[in-house]
Image 1 (cartoon, rainbow, N blue to C red):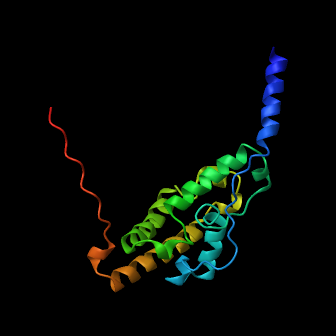
Image 2 (cartoon, rainbow, N blue to C red):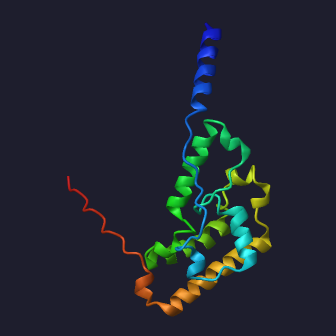
Image 3 (tube, helix red, strand yellow):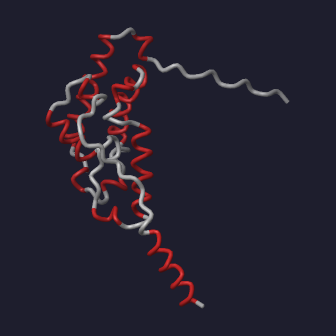
Amino acid sequence: MIKKILLVLLIILLIIQFIRPKKNIHPGPEPADISTLYPVPANVDSILSVACKDCHSNNTRYPWYNNIQPVAWFLANHVTDGKRSFNLNEFATYPLARQYDKIEEIKKQIDKGDMPLSSYTLIHKDAVLTDAQKKAVIGWSENIRQQMEAKYPKDSLVRRRPPAPPVAER
């Protein structure tokens, strides 16, 4: 009985190798990239490339193990979630208030140690940020926030949240 179960699992594992998710690779210029609005210093760009852009851009560098299912599905889902949250290549398309929030979130996430994710840095040791790298990215994001605050009215940088639904009385 156990041999039959193992054989069925092996067959399923072999079959799913042919079901592949679409890769996140879009070569060419990115007209809505954050760099079209705000300069990205070379040192910060190299940090972002190693520690952020695999999940937060339109161009993921795929490791060899992305060719194995169900790992590729997990990575595809992870990249989709990362891009939905914040995409450096789509930044210029965001409403101004969302841009401001996302720039602030960069600082918060790095300060708390939430980004890059530990599950990412477990395999990508080069993505573990040093204190100097954290300081560089945080300084860059704070600079952008200051530029936005100087350029735009304060109320345009505040995200309007829909009102909470009324609480039903019993």
